[in-house]
Image (cartoon, rainbow, N blue to C red; front, side, top):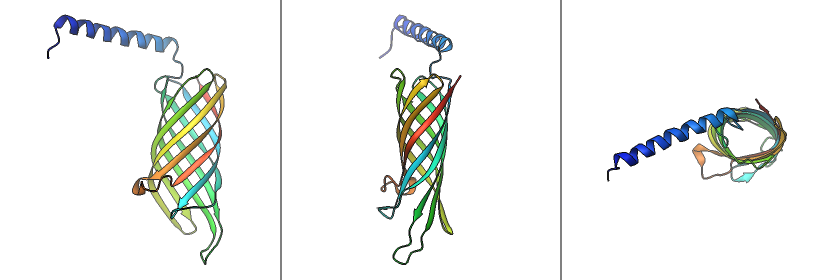
Length: 186
């Protein structure tokens, strides 16, 4: 069905005016858009190996995000954790290390000073135990909440679930959680 020229013209003019007014509002008060957030977190983490939960470990992570809109941000994150595994049933013990990096997309709500968010990401995870190591592509899903004490300073907490792309049936394969601190500018 063809749209009459007058209706099409009104729609086009309204769309152009809406885009222009939106860009003026963004320039006047960008909110979270066009802002950079840098954060760090100590992490408690555990692995699921061969269908069972292995001993938990600790480490840390850092993240960098850029606000594309008020609610959506893109970012990168890196993390490292170490997990002590005791020798049992004739298997040697040691330290299982996990090093990961991911590109993320997050959606956050802005409730006054509190910002809950959901995060999705793709990345790589390198796992090392004694003389063996493996690197796998991962999918990442996370939930977080940050309380902004000042426009530039927040504390919060986050939990992230990771799955290996080669074995999506084993979800989660790795979980990290912990408190975090974040700085935002400009």
